[in-house]
Amino acid sequence: SLTGFHLHRGALAAMHRPTLPAVADVVRGARRVVVLEDIVDHTNVGAIFRSCAGLGVDAVLVTPRCADPLYRRSIRVSMGTVFQVPWTRIDPWPGGIRTLQAAGFVTAALALSEDSVPLDVFSRNAPERLALVLGTEGDGLGRRTLGEVDVTVTIPMAGGVDSLNVAAAAALASWELRSRG
Image 1: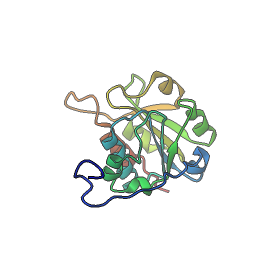
Image 2: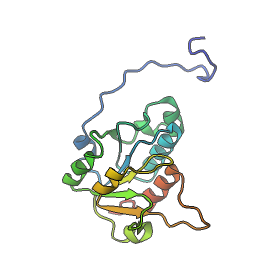
Image 3: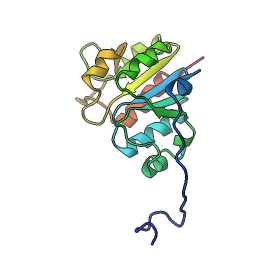
């Protein structure tokens, strides 16, 4: 009766939302960072966090308009890994790209463009510190974002399919670009 629907299966909790850390604190010492630009589907956010946790991504940064990783659906789909992977919001955006570059990260957008480097080619000489930027469902990354990043990377597709779901793309790219050192 408290929630108005029977989804909680008997478990209820009240928690204080933690103060988010500064970007510099989250990426300090990180080698692989995933940046989520305006991803609005909580299921995708949760699935990306789960893949990041399982594939050794050191941190996740979410832009101001990205869905909340602490929303219950994100938490559930992530299998709780939103509490495991260090994360924070990066603001301003896309101005935060320069912050990542100044911290020694190569910024790579996962996007479809004429000058995109195939993922397998890029991974052969992947940089020591990499921030992989993924865009919203449907529209992908913004033009300003694409203009600020160091390189654009694409997942080569077959069968007339242009791209993968953002959560699937995040998992595949995280595996291919995993830190091997």
